[in-house]
Image 1: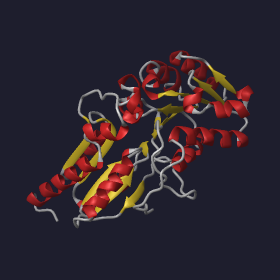
Image 2: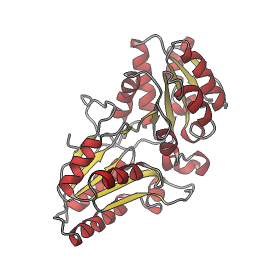
Image 3: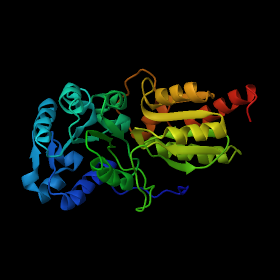
Image 4: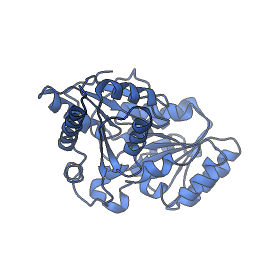
Length: 325
């Protein structure tokens, strides 16, 4: 697909859109329950509870108990959605998720809000900058990271399209509308948002918009970039990434996450084993972030459009020194 350079501001954050999708899906599927860890007004799961009070349970600030309860319900055959802030889900409750849900491959879907430093003003205690690494390495877990309200809502149906656990990484604040209602978001897919021949830029979630802005800035200087939204992080679209880097000969990965053990590490390994190219991975460099405005934070920690542009120019220069196009 092709994204417009003039994006419309989104009216709702992805956390709200996902919960809207839960309500819509709940009208079609009467079987699943939703469990919340105290913050239903923030994750917007209260919307599901308002419409289906007999299928909604708020277990309070007790994430380990939340997932242990979900495991018990799912083991009897009923699908469960668990909701909360990502930093608490992927740290406090990771043992329960690993051993009680992923090991028996139970049908539990996760609404994880405040991914990365989109939690901005809430500070480091609420900024989940290690969550992709944690969830991606657990066997049987699938990981989705939508970038806009449409993709977030559609990820509800994607999550329920398979048996087994699915982690959905969502954002605190609304950013932009990107996708048409006709788009689908299957596991293992990606979206080519820009088509170019000089460098591949891969991102997911909120930083997709920074990648698009960077591509526009590069285009003004005659540099054409492929921009890939890797919304399905596990499994991811290996074929699309390899096809793109074979065409462009250079790769930049930008993500709102620790650079170490993030998607950049995964794609760097892919290129090393399949098609080595000059590479740059942008993310937090082994540091905690801080409280502040979202735009100032992504600028300070090196994942804004400006940094993506600089990284793209660097890998293109490295490509030239190696005799690439």
